[in-house]
Image (cartoon, rainbow, N blue to C red; front, side, top):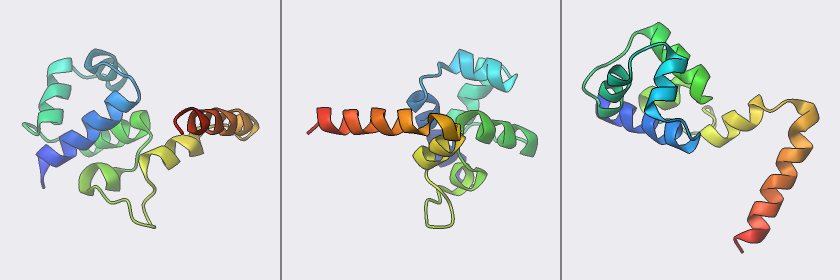
Length: 104
């Protein structure tokens, strides 16, 4: 298992979501030091911790462990969109459209 790559994927998604390590650790119910060790690849994690990380960050365990983003494994952005309630997706679509217009 490439724990350094696993940690990089976790850190990238944590930062993408705007969580500090302290906030993430609190949500995960572990110490910030343990989060740091995971993100640096110094330590691995239990299956329950992996599942909690997956749930908190909105990414699949396959992506966390193996970096798979093929057709069978959804990418992190798609995972977040799936978590958006159906009645609120229209707002999300508008935000994305406005963002894309702004960066052109």
